[in-house]
Image (cartoon, rainbow, N blue to C red; front, side, top):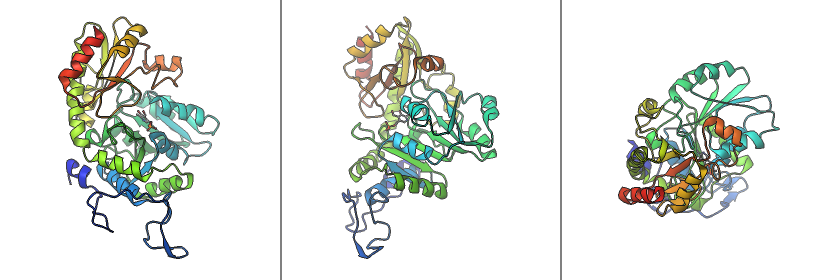
Length: 381
Ligand SMILES: Cc1ncc(COP(=O)(O)O)c(C=O)c1O
């Protein structure tokens, strides 16, 4: 199956009990047994381990990411945490330095006393990356494109190095989605998603996902998830599954609108820099063309004045864009990273990677582009 068919049919079957075409919401915590240890259905015993609605979503996730196994979690951070928990004291992780603030907070604060060592580096400096690898290096963590500066990392080039050293390589594919980029095909071992974003697609749930290239690693992570409990409930599993069925349609419009918003901002007299990989001036435009199908709906920018007040004034005036955390839904959202999504990153670290006080991040939705541009125009005026 090709991608647009997979989002609808990948890993899906009519319900075995009733023939229902859409997977029912199996709102149950437990499953009957005929004799102790003999469940009626061999796959279902207790819903922390497996639930048919979640299984249908997990099969869809594996299918669209071209992986062997998918796992659905209660949030993106729960998915990340499940993976990091498989490491032990003494292990080292090499991570990209420009990350979603919550991921950075988890790595630096929750795992502070774990004995796991994190290195935060520019993953485009492959010499520096290779110089940090030693026998304790167990995982490489990359977000591409990054939140909020839209930096890219070369998945294929990094995977050649991780394969040589037998290090696991995980990619946070939240911004791109498998419609635009397939990390497992490019050599990564694990894909992570905040499914709260484009996969769910309607800003009506929280969910996370891990997809593994190999079934064995997927089984190990499934055990970890079962034993620690960060699972996605059946209702939200159903909603993500439904969201995925229109992923390709939504992403196409997000990309069209994202490109037009980026071009509009680039030509606006009050704007200094626009961060969008679809602009030829973007430092990673060529890499984006190589590893992504198109450029997505996330656009960041800052002001010629460099003043935080200009960003705040703009964000108070937008009408169709809603000032809110999150991204990836059908509606357009606007965010002030230093006060919102990246408030948990220390100020000096933010400045080091380029998250300035006047930076604004837009999640461009699927509304009519004329209305979106008019809204930006009036808020900038
Ligand atoms: C790129 C990225 N990764 C991970 C997360 C965390 O996901 P969640 O909020 O679903 O826990 C987010 C949330 O904004 C994100 O933008």
